[in-house]
Length: 99
Image 1 (cartoon, rainbow, N blue to C red):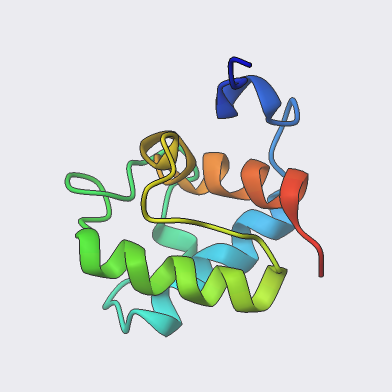
Image 2: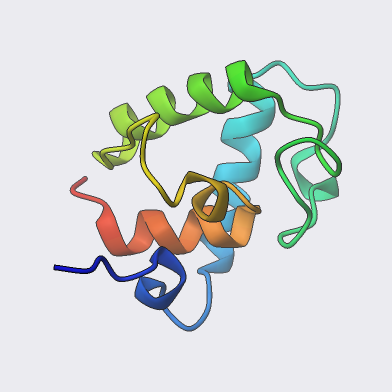
């Protein structure tokens, strides 16, 4: 059975309140020297853009799993899409959260 790409599973638009909440979570949990409001919803999280590295993404995935009940695996084939931006992450959480 072929898997459906994560991008096809996303809701049409990310919830602005969830995006704000995630921006605050990222800056707090990763001790970033940036204001949550300064993180553009479509800016890349990994590498260029916000500049997160693989360790940051792993830490973020653990926090998201605990807070939202979303199961994120390091070997998930769509991680690059899930963590592409705040908007993508918010859509994924909205579709998969249990808390």
